[in-house]
Image (cartoon, rainbow, N blue to C red; front, side, top):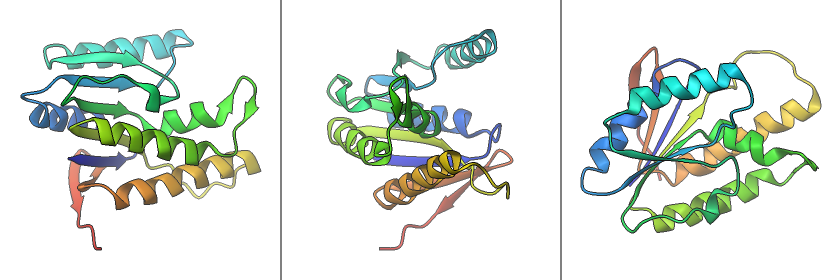
Length: 174
């Protein structure tokens, strides 16, 4: 089962995703893939809050900022990836420059994980509706993330948007 969850910042999508992963992974190993790097005190504080919230839920946390296709998973794993938004930024903006093919790499890596995991819950942010004009590189990132949303939602078993803490399930029309 693959569940794609999106929503705005602080909408409750992480908590919802964690609970869905716990439901799905009752009989399997639950892997929480944290894609955000810890580079300052504010991020360190946020990571600790997230870890405290997940305490007792049975997750093994793996911190990995990019190249998720190379993750080794136990058989039958339930994988929660938090988040596609950060993963895309990490793949696109590297120390050696901008990877203009980050979307393709992420899609391939995700499909590799999907083939190896029993369940995947993927969390992403809605960054598409603020109406602000950005510089060309930021616009490219937003287009890359939007393209990933379309491609990944199309192969999901469930697509959920979290709005003000309320999950809204979308039907997938084929």
